[in-house]
Amino acid sequence: MELSSKTDAELDRWIANHEERKLTETPLYRSLLEERARRSQLTHKLRIDRSMELLKNAALMQVCTTYGALAQASDVPWSLARRQMDGANGHLDRLSDLCHARGLPFLTALVVNQQDVETGVLKGEALRGFIACARRLNHLITDEVAFHQARRDECWAWGRAQTGD
Image (cartoon, rainbow, N blue to C red; front, side, top):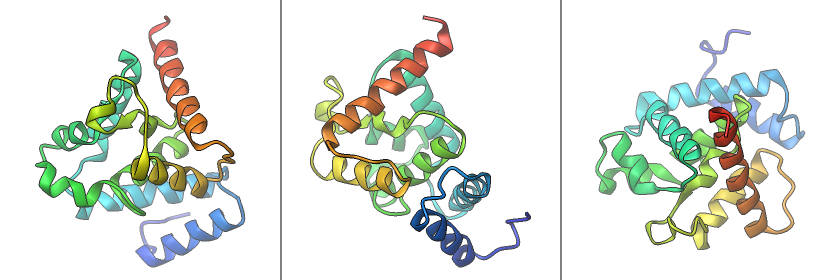
């Protein structure tokens, strides 16, 4: 199906319908997410390709990274990046969509606040946003902190598998 001829509203409606029906594993849903992420690059300064590279490298290095590092990877000052970073349809949501669409671990689990980069713990509003995105992608969550930690650990396991460690 040719998605480039569809309007943004049509894409969003199809994506929402898939999510409401819990059809988030279908090839069409994955294609819809890819197309929406591609289009977001036309209006957002934060670069998905650079952010994905940063997140993959963090997984390989077995570390967490920060929101500021994502902004820096795109050469965007934090003062401009902040508004595009989180929330529904924010940069982190698009990155999570692509991880889902491409069968990657939930690499956005590696993004934490600056003060928590050593512990890798996600808290407060950042955790709530991460969980909201995961639920939209049809993840079942009973313990939000444990869910985040499990996704973070999956990212690191994926990173070790890429290097053969």
